[in-house]
Image 1 (tube, rainbow over the protein chains, first blue to last red):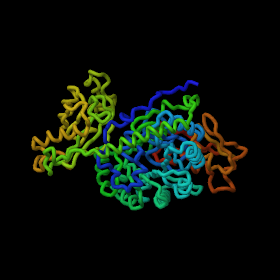
Image 2 (image 1 turned 60 degrees about the vertical axis):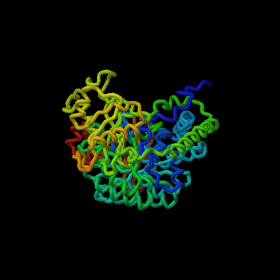
Image 3 (image 1 turned 90 degrees about the vertical axis):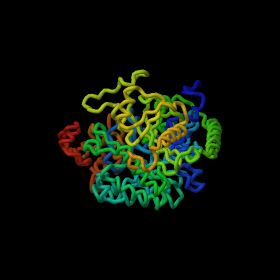
Image 4 (image 1 turned 90 degrees about the horizontal axis):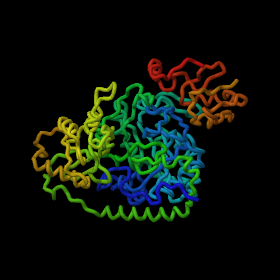
Length: 502
Length: 92
């Protein structure tokens, strides 16, 4: 039969969800890892910054039940327009999930990773979760399996995780102190009882730490996710980072709290502030001394499909999958070819040596500068008003380094009407443009393909130099070129007025 | 005696997995309790398991229509805030 395929050719390996050419650039944040671990993560988009440009992941939402309450989650909420953890449009049975995975893997050969992440806690749904893993490890052995968990039930399922060849586990650990935990987790369900407050948090923390140790003892890779909650666990996360590193976690991913009142979460309703991009970056930097930090997380949905930062879930709804016929044996052959090509390309890329700052005439004591880039496919490509996110780079005498991405809200509707969107929304005293400029706090330059007159003036007023001179140039080269221009003016010398308290 | 599930239920399966009597079944718009099977966990557990794991306030009621998890009891959100956000209602 004629398959309702979306595309007969593999989507180009480049030009996926992330706009940067080299988030993290060289050296890869995972550079310190032993070879056998690097080999395990080199095609895992959620673990390797390098890989996330080329390899895709998908989550299947087979795990609706949860056994704890987090103050940043509302179990009622389900909105297909939102992109954030815990949210899905469609809960699947294990059978539906397996069909979906096989269909996506045949269609998107660069999909290397299948995760079960919710919308509840996978290990609070052991039969649905492990049935899915068991069947997939038999039928699609070329797909890596991973699971995310709050850790409460982890110790009792570590052996089953090992048995199903799940070699990547993510544990969300927001605290190691029950007093802090009581401010994040109102209750847990444990040994047939709902346990509130500090006691509940104490048990959760104990199980998380025990589970982490059991996994690393078995050689299973563990990434730790933490939600940064200002005033609750911000300082505390530095200690969390040290402890999880000591227990063998290989990567720490600190994510910003999402707390909008309309989501109906405790934090949203109680107006708990979200961290600013600067706060997040400072904390990531503070933790970076202790372990590898992940900076390319896009906080994707529990049913996301595709490269990080994109979601092709709409192409694979159950009604579409039901009429697809998948020859997985044939697909595996095609997938192998695509994977090999990408790995070869990555290997080649690792060999490229980028010019050092000193070769470009930048003094060794020049201060670092943060720049925001409206990029696409690794080049400076986006119109300021069309950028859905800005990639934040730090230029310093050591070179150009990707720091983070910061999401914006689109304010520009038309191609030629960059000022038109600059109106405050009803009830808000701040226009979208002002809000987007605030997102760029700490940056001294914004690189984009084009900037309208009005944003230009506002950016300058905010102390951020708009720069449209490097349109279509590779991002890192453009950032270094601008850094060099600033250096030539003498503004980078340590004695020069330092606007940014670095 | 039997508990019941209200329209607040979000169909998350948590109660189905912990019920010692297999008394809860999937249905639309929300899951239901088979009152011939439900014992309110007497003899099995100190507290009804569905109500002990349910993440949603007001989703489980007893024969008198009383909420086992009244508004604010699980999230700690104050009643006035719940009213402000339309998340509060009187017992059934």
